[in-house]
Figure: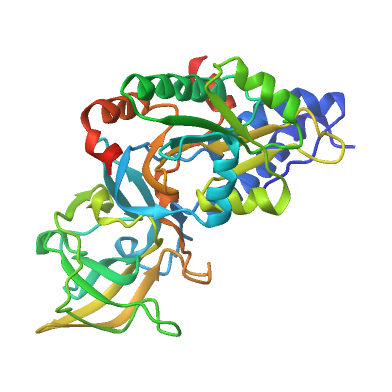
Length: 204
Length: 209
């Protein structure tokens, strides 16, 4: 994680926003997103699979899970991801696929259970959330190769910092294997098509 | 006290330093140091990866210059670590054509990441439909995404080398430049990372303005 020291003087503040914009531009990866139906499913570590299963405690054992990562203080990217997630869960249900949606916070310091509960409710009642902390969160992120970068987060600023993160999302089968990797922002229609056109995947 | 006029240049230096660190930290990109002691066509500047609209993984290797003819043994080499060591070479000289030499060998601990001698393997796991295209001062290697096992680690680097082919054997007699020189280690990461797109709300906002 990268931290940029807070600059407090009024003279410096004048230049902070343009400079941070330069930093954000430089930090962004240029990679295009792609939807990948895995030839070889990736089995999740038991710890990660167990954590996902806890989200929908009374779940159908044939339930597939859609997993996206983000943070509730995100004003535009994560809401778009969650809207897609909610849309996909509804699309799956329409195709009679048992499907649950899970939002995993990468920012548990600000995203309390109360905030998360209220946040995801705005996107429908069919979504759940997962809040992990410390080493457990780091292991969970590593299981999905999630990348994060925190800016201006420090002891003097634990509220108004910025987080960049990868927007890769995952479709997990009932046995706990990653079967499809896609971008939560740009590839939702690919997954909707998958529900309609690749029924054999969900019967396997 | 720093005069306000000197502040912007100072912040620029600071920001470029930080952003350079971030570029180096991006596993999908290798930014290489310029070496003026090398001929421009042998001096690698960067290796980047991208996913094409056709869902291919594209490695773009950029050099400081290019040449039409010269020492025929000089090759641009892309090395991929993905369960095995895969090596792809194309002549530096544009007039020598775009024929790609492909080799693979087992990945073993305590083994050099770029072996000096490579033999064509009988057990061929090479990607089918590899495409190579010359671009301005560089080369693009395009691999189908379906070749990648996303459950495994991935690593890559690029070199300019002098190499001779004798039958089924490739012998690398000299390494002119290595993109990841000085980075240490094999720079291996989860293959899923190749698909990751980092999203910054600030960047999206800037794009709309």
